[in-house]
Amino acid sequence: MKNFYNTLFLNNRFFYCLSAIATLFVIGFFAPFFFELSKVLLFMLIMLTLIDVFILYQTKKGIKIDRNLPERLSNGDENRISLLIKNEYPFVAHISLIEELPYQFQKRDFIFEQQVQKKQEKTIYYFVRPTERGVYSFGFLNVFVNSALKLATKKYVLCEEKELKCYPSFLKLRAFHMKSFQNSSTAVGTRKVRRIGNSLEFEQIKEYVSGDDIRTLNWKATAKRNHFMVNQYVEEKSQSVYTIIDKGRAMQMQFNGLSLLDYAVNATLAISHIILRKQDKAGMLSFSTKLEDWVVAERRSSQMSLISEALHAIKTNFLEPDFSTLYAVVKRKITHRSLLILFTNFETIDSLNRQLPYLRALAKNHLLLVVFFKNTELDMMIDAKAETIQQVYDSIIAEKFMYEKKRIVNELKKYGIQSVLTKPEDLTGDSIQKYLELKSRGLF
Image 1 (cartoon, helix red, strand yellow):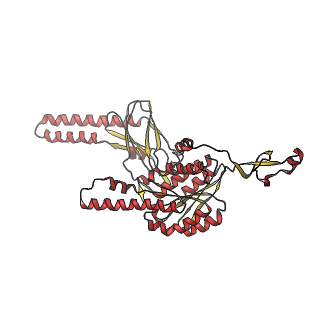
Image 2 (image 1 turned 30 degrees about the horizontal axis):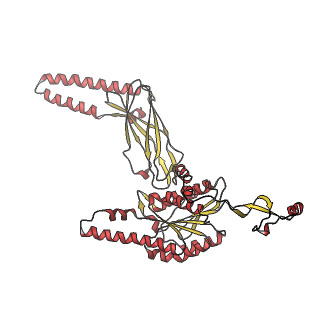
């Protein structure tokens, strides 16, 4: 009985009809015909309501819904969720579905209005776009069912609560993987050259020719053939590439709902995938006041899983970053020449100059690529038509800041440091393109 009481609701249509009948009762004091008519109408309303309740409750589980959630959410992407609705009633069901979305979406009126034919199934889809990493808790699915009379409603509470982890953007990995093999390395003027390497990966024994390294002489083969033979080694194909994420306060700015830190995290996952596909070793680390989330560059099969878990766990208070600590730890732990891809942000030339000594020190032993961001809001201010003195002033200040960004690029170039200045939404694609360019040029 308690369950019946908690799941039964009377609709607005019932109360509208009841109000009309009450009005007729009042009129009936002056015209007896309307008094008799109102009694008949009240009886009919009660009977129709009882019939509506009966047909809603005669089938114990009249509505069934399967909610198909992904195993994990992709940050910054549209994640599809499907609802399979099964109508077990012998009539057309008018359904209102209220989904209990995770609190991060801040949406409490997520309602679907559906009409499902008798004994039929219907699938509906909706998309959610998370903008921060973490755990997302999906609640119950509240379903309100009406018959064609729409005088009463039966409530169902379906689907179990479920928690999903939100990982860095992995849905776009396939698209960036395809893009990496359509890169401009096959452009006019560029060709692949097979180079003899000095690694320990043996390829073959061949006759000595002028110019071969005498240190590779194979004396046993020389004695058998009675002329000089040398060992030939293949080129070292697997290079170490580390992505370094600045978790400082400059990475707190938000564009399109995502912070610069989250853009960098998403780009790190995508570029690590491409690095491993290109037979290089992928590693990562993050830093603010100290180095954290360290994953050593390797090519093992579980590397992407390790990087993904490390990226998912990145947390920060957006404090001032300590580049001196970054330099000290990198010098101690990364002993072989590697490509370092640093995701950070500099707004002015002064902010760069404070960190430039440490960047130059990193570039002495490694190939350093600094990736930082354009402020797209400044672009809009510059492109907007200035109609007032304040707008003219704002446009000039915006142009000054954009000029500072270009100065930063030139300053890094002066010291042999590679750089990419990109829009936040283009970060992943531009970073991958620059990595492929450096690799095709054989700079690391």
